[in-house]
Image 1 (cartoon, one colour):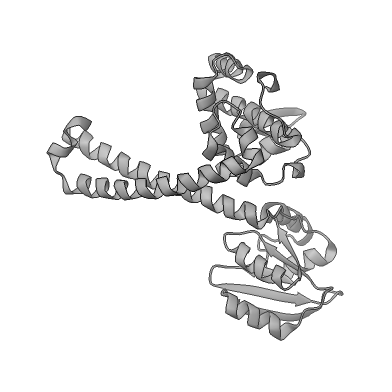
Image 2: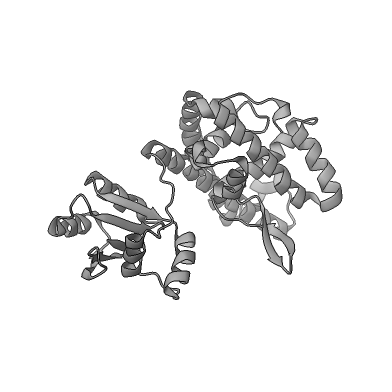
Amino acid sequence: MGMDVHKNYLQVAVLDEKGKILNNSRVDNNMIKVNEFFDSLHPGNNTKIVMESCGMWYNIYECLRKRQLNVRLSNPVKTRAIASAKIKTDKLDAVKLADLLRGGYIAECYIATTETMDLRELVRHRAALVRMRTKLKNKIHSIMFMNGTSIEKLKELNDYRINGCLRIIESLNDEINTVSKKTLLLAQEDEMARLLMTVPGIGYYSALLIVSEIGDIHRFPDSYHLCSYAGLIPSTRSSGGTTYHGSITKSGSKYLRWIMLECLHAHIRNEKNSNVTQFYHRLSKKKGNSKAAVAAASKLVKIVYWIMKEKRMYDNHHG
C-alpha cells in the first residue's frame, strides 16, 4: 500500500505482490474516515504500507501503528532521487510509492519515540512563542524609529499600535514562563540533557531541544553524519576532478542548526579559552564571522555527539 498524504485527503493505492492495482481510493484526511477505510479493507499481517514524511504524517502513522500494521515512513528527498532513476518522472503518487516499496526501493526516515515527539513539540512551541515576541518587539522598534523616539520615552508616545503590542508581549511572557518552567523540570529529569548542560553555552532549554531533535544518537554512525543532519557542513560539487565547496547544505533539522549556532555564540562569550572559541577566532580572521560560526558550530555538534554517545560530561579536550 502506498499513501500519498495531502492536507485534506489521502490517496491510497493497494497493489498485489505482482504490482496489479487492486484499489486506488481518495480518503478524507481525518481519523474517522481513515479508520473506516482500513476497517473496510481488512489488511493482513503481511501487508506493507508506505507514506511520505510530510507535515501531516504523525497522526496517520500512529493510527496505523495502533492497528499493528507494518508501516514505513519514506524520506521524500531520497525516495524521489531513487524514483527519478526508476520511473523518470517528478510526480510520486500513491501507486508509485507502493511500487517502490514492493521493489524494496524506499529510503526510510527515522521515527522518534512518542516521548521524544512530545518533547519536540514542547520545545518547538516555546521557540514559536519567542519568535512571535521578537516580531512584536521589532515592530515597536520600527514605530519608535519612525517617530525618532528612544526606548525611555515609550510610554509618552501613547501610540495605540505600541500599546497593543505591549499587551500581547505581556501575555506571551506569561506563556513563555509557563512553558519554560515545564522545560526546566524535564531537563533536570533527563540524563542526556543534564550531560549536555555541562557544555558552556548550552542551557536547559537548548539541551532539551538538542535531545528532542537528535533522538537516538546511535542512528548516526559518526559525528560527521550528525553535522550533516544539522545542515552544518558545506555543500560540495565535483567537476573535472576538482571538488568545490559551497555554502552549508541546510538539510536536516533547521531547529538543530539554529540552536547550535545560538549555543556557539553563548559558548564563545562564556568560555574564552576553549578549543572551539580559539578555533572560531582563528577562522574569523581568515574567512569572516559567519563562516567561522558555521565551522565552529559544527565542532560543537561533534562535542555533543561524543557526550551523547559515551554518556560523559564535557571537558575542553573534547573539541
